[in-house]
Length: 124
Image 1: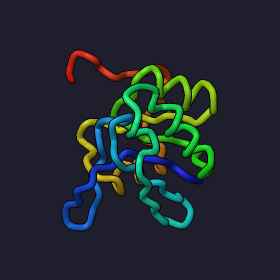
Image 2: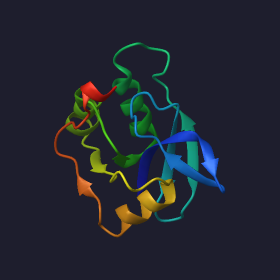
Image 3: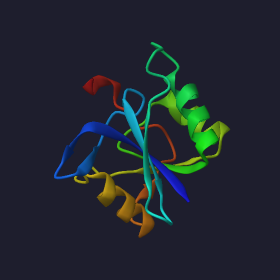
Image 4: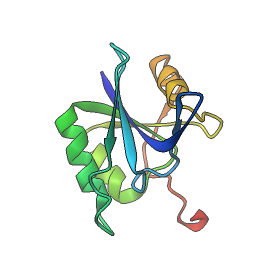
């Protein structure tokens, strides 16, 4: 199964950090939960001001992603990824900082499925 996670450019001790911003993330890690392989890809929607979600959603579809692990996701991206493509969205808790921890928690069934957008516009 392939899961996608927005990640930061920086690593700490060789471990990638989860990016709390979904649409504005420069990079996404696409993790094969069976083999453990990680492919880091650039956000294909960075060149547009609005509507990045559609570019990201298309890329996920092409790569066979079936779940996305996020700290937050706005309504536009949520609609395209979950409602249109049927890719499940799971919530990474605030205390989880690293990609490998987020994936492990997903694999062990600890992450809650996100059923509606949760991005807080007032925080940005």
